[in-house]
Length: 473
Ligand SMILES: NC(=O)c1ccc[n+]([C@@H]2O[C@H](COP(=O)([O-])OP(=O)(O)OC[C@H]3O[C@@H](n4cnc5c(N)ncnc54)[C@H](O)[C@@H]3O)[C@@H](O)[C@H]2O)c1
Ligand SMILES: O=P(O)(O)OC[C@@H](O)[C@@H](O)[C@H](O)[C@H](O)CO
Image 1 (cartoon, protein in one colour):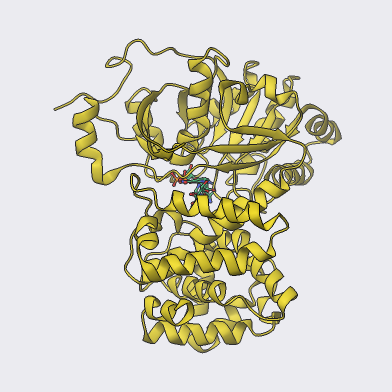
Image 2 (cartoon, rainbow, N blue to C red):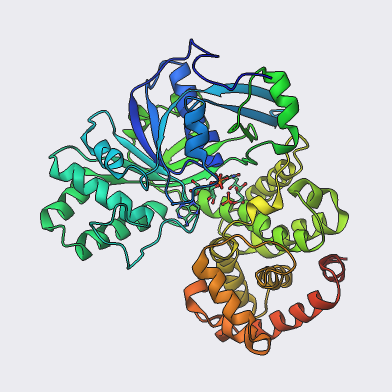
C-alpha cells in the first residue's frame, strides 16, 4: 500500500505565510487560484499561501478533512493540448495553508481578521453563493450565506482598526465584485453595523469583478488507482484540469504588482473594463455547457467529450453557438468565431473526462446567467425564439422533475420544482412565472410557454436525441 501524500512523504516543500483568504475549497479554486499562487511562489514572486474557508455546512464531501489528512497538499494534473503540444503534467500544490470549517470553528475563522499579512480575498461559491439571505444575523456563528460570513469577518477587521482587503470573487455571475459589495453593504445596514463601518468598507476595500476560465473536471475517479501507482502516493483530493487558463480582473493597475500573476507568465489580464471578455466566455463556453447537460444526460451521454463525438449533438452545439449565441453578442463576429472554434476544441480534449453531471450543479441559476439573457435578446431582436436554446430550456425543466436524471441544486430551488411538478397541467405556467428563479415572469415572453409545453410533450414521448435530430438535421 502506498503512503498518503503529506509533508512527511515530501519534506522539502516550503510553507508560505497566509496572504489570501479563499471562500470555496472546491476543485476549481484549487486548480485555478491556488495553482496560480503555486506558480508565483515557484518563481519567488509572491511568498504566500491561501487559507480556505468552507462556505456551506455540508461542503462537497468533506474536502476540509481530506485536505487536513494530507497536510493540505494535493496534486494538480494538467492534461490537454496547448500550443500544439500535448501536456500531461503533475505538480504537488503547497500553496494552501489549511481549510477552516466555520461551522466547526467560527472563532478560528473570525481570528483571520487579526492577521496583517492577509491582503487578498477570493471566492468561488458557485453562482448560487453570492446571495442575500434575509434570515442571516450578525450574531449567527456563522451566518449561512457567503456574503454574510464575509461581512462578519470584515466587521471584525474594522473593529480591530486594520486595513481592508482586495476582494476578487470568481463566481460566474455578471459584475460579481459589485454584487458581492452590494450584499455586504446590505448586511452592514441591516445589522446596524454603523456608518463608520460602511465608510471603512468603501474606502479601505477594493471589490474587483473578475472572470475565470479553465476547465476543471476535478477528481479523476476512473484513473485514481493507476495514478496512485504512477505518483507513488495516495492523494484523495488531486484535481485534473486543462492546461489553458485565463483570468480577467477588473481592478486598479497597481494590482499587477501586488499580485504578480502576469509577471509569473500566467494568462491574466488586469483591465478597467472586463465586459467583452465576460460576455464572450459566459455565453460561448458556459452557455453551450449548460445547454448540452440536460439534453446529453437525457440521451444517456456522460461527458462533454461524448457530446462532441456524437454527430447530432456536436451539430447542435455548433449551431447553437453560431446561429443563436454569436449573433447576439456585441463583438466582431470573426473574433467570436475563432474563440468559439477554440472552445469546441477544448470541449473535445481527449485527455480529460468532464462529466455532464458535474456541470449540472445549480443548473437553474446557470441557465439564468448563461443562456437566458441571450434567449431574451434573441426574442426581442428577431421576434421569435431561438429554437435550440428553447429545446435545451425544456430539457432542463424536465430534468428538474428528478425522475429521469439526478438533480443537484439548492433545497429552495428543488422545492419550487417539486411543488410545480406536483400539478403537471399547470407546471409550465407556474415555473415560467416564478420570478424567484428567473428574475422575471417568463410567461410574459411571447410564445415561450407554448414552445416549452410542446417540447416537454416531445421529450416525454421520444428521447432527446430524436428531438435534436429534428432540429439540427
Ligand atoms: N470546474 C470547472 O471547470 C470550473 C471552471 C470555471 C469556473 N468554475 C466555477 O467554480 C464553481 C465550483 O466548481 P467546482 O468544480 O470547484 O465544484 P466543486 O463541487 O468542487 O466545488 C463547489 C464549491 O462551491 C461551494 N458551494 C456549493 N454550493 C454553494 C452555495 N449554495 N453557497 C456557497 N457555496 C457553495 C462548495 O462548498 C465548494 O466550495 C462553479 O460553479 C463555477 O462557477 C468551475
Ligand atoms: O463550473 P460550473 O459548475 O459553474 O460550470 C460548469 C462549466 O461550465 C464550467 O466549469 C466551465 O468548464 C468553466 O467555466 C471553464 O472555464
